[in-house]
Length: 220
Ligand SMILES: NC(=O)c1ccc[n+]([C@@H]2O[C@H](COP(=O)([O-])OP(=O)(O)OC[C@H]3O[C@@H](n4cnc5c(N)ncnc54)[C@H](OP(=O)(O)O)[C@@H]3O)[C@@H](O)[C@H]2O)c1
Image 1 (cartoon, helix red, strand yellow):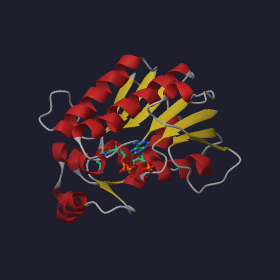
Image 2 (cartoon, helix red, strand yellow):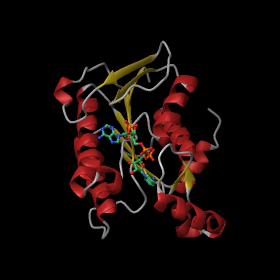
Image 3 (cartoon, helix red, strand yellow):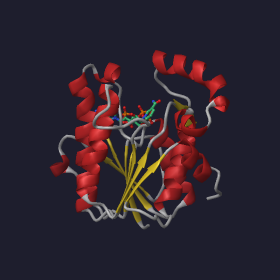
Image 4 (tube, protein in one colour):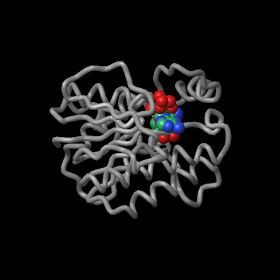
């Protein structure tokens, strides 16, 4: 893995992902961001781009691409604006990475993602998973966390309430319910870095809570 691309590098998962890529791998790390993070490394290449204009982006080589982009309907302001980020920008990034040679695409989706889901959020996530599969990466890894835990700069009332409710219940969530246990964004990022260099048994792999925790606990 000599060259990696990252989208969503300034978010909860993305910040941790970039820190780990710089600390734990030797890869040239290319960030596609709308605002430059306050980070320095000789292996860090920051490309400030408009995610809606992929034809204007630079095209450094890419072996593995990581996507941790996302917004919320509240933050975006409408369902259409949410789709523009969580679907259009993600697919622009994935297609550009494929053109640059990416054999592996590791993307943060969500538990419950399905094109047939009742909730708009899960339906969009499911449609994006399907569109990513259609791109034809040799390996596509779909991270399917439940509620993400970690320090956010921005206040999200719903997520804070869910965290407060789910934390004490989490140890009781076993069997099929374990996929719905909250997970730290830093553990998702750690698992994504491990998955970048791991031989994978199938072209499309979905990673839920227990898979994520097993990988996150593996030494780098
Ligand atoms: N929150 C949860 O509990 C939860 C649960 C399951 C799955 N997920 C999914 O996990 C993924 C990552 O979540 P997260 O909490 O790490 O995300 P986050 O902290 O909200 O960060 C999102 C990233 O996307 C970027 N972004 C958002 N809108 C953009 C736009 N219009 N143009 C360019 N960049 C934009 C942000 O850039 P800026 O820093 O410039 O804003 C940031 O880098 C998301 O897809 C989310 O749906 C979340």
